Image (cartoon, rainbow, N blue to C red; front, side, top):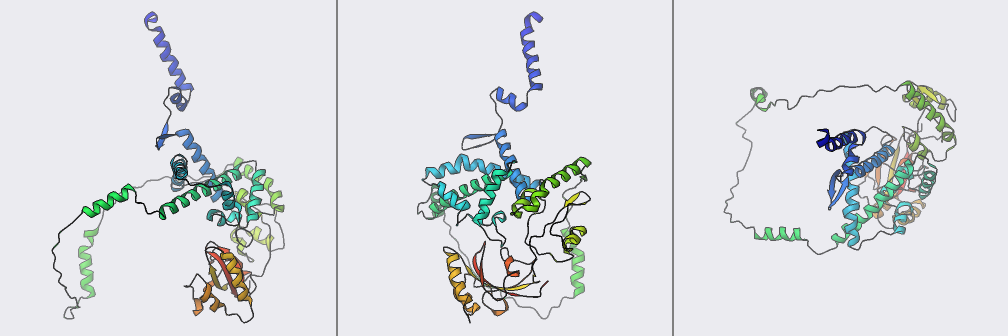
Length: 436
């Protein structure tokens, strides 16, 4: 047997050893059978390439949410986003360019850092100033910080934003091309022909049956209850599934706590001096920046020692440890803020919205100006009519606030000003309640 089958046996043993030594994917590639997760427009998408995109979108999701934990729904959305990118690159963008559609470099710059940004840039809190408004300077600050970010996470997020804006611009132009077209495609023509060829002969008679309550018949509550008790089992359904589950409590180890302490200490010096607190918290904290004004006692819901330090006059607290959590606070601003404000606005949308808002602001600031009359004449929002006044949105508090209107709580009472939100540009008039 050694003489006749020695070579064959050696090959079999060699392949077996190779199987245990080399990864499965490498063996598949070695023998010309790469693993694909799918195919788009005749082009295969390998598992390795797909997983690379999934890892990228997982990182982006962690940056956006501030958490590395994803449930099943989030994981499915990440996979869908990764697959959609392959569809865009392999099929849609290619077809859009073939149709003569282009997105130029200067156009992309204007959409990401210019004065007329794309919605996902303009509505991104990372690029909002202290008034909650989009500010191109914040984009420049982010790009500068990105260059100094050794982790590469900020660059990954910026590349994602640019790619999304770029692809969305193609979709917008592609959709506009078809919306303005008078040509019907083959599917539409086939449906039109089928609809035209469909016919029917129908004979019918219409007879109305008037309905009126029969006052001669009465139904008592007892009769209704008796009917319900006699028939309730008709609608009974058996359980469709049994659910069993096990809960595992995730407890950080001493090593995990020490690592978190070291990370907190390393970030503390930058926390003391940074001029861009929003970007700093986005990169380092489990809590994102918010515009909420805290009053004495409210920080106790987070940490009592933190509350005592802040309202005891400390501009910056030391690092405070409670259980497995580390805290530090820095007072950025103090103000007398009312509990509520009654808000009126005049809304402008579309082209030159900011310029038109500035023009009407001058009218609203004039002595004796009737704000409600200006709202009735110029505002795109003709439905807000709180307290019977045109333009009246109503009372707002910190917990009941339209995004972008946070400045109404600190604005000068009775003095109109402008602000920008996702809805457009506004001329706003604030009438405040009690101070806190």
